[in-house]
Length: 104
Image (tube, rainbow, N blue to C red; front, side, top):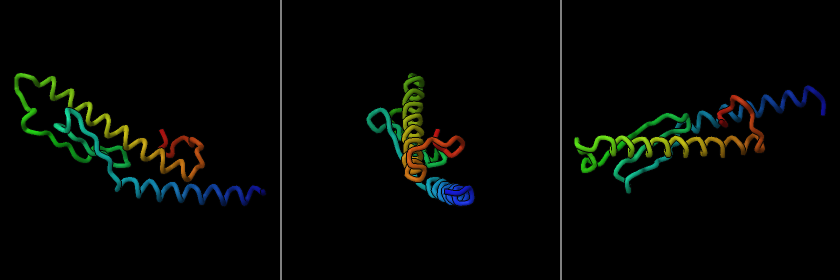
């Protein structure tokens, strides 16, 4: 394979990755904690897009519990979003971890 062909393939892969990143920005994953009392939604850009808290879990005498539930739900949502991105990008890269391409 000559250098020109390799460059063409690299450009095609970069284009596919860019398109996939744009598509992933519109896809979401959801995670919850406390048996569904707190749920968080994140997108493929690893941004939190929604947070729902059941009013019954709001207790001014136990703010720490609510904070823990929110942290657990948001961290799990971001983890799931990261996994979604990695799975989609690995389809393009054949499993190679290419720095700066949303795989970390």
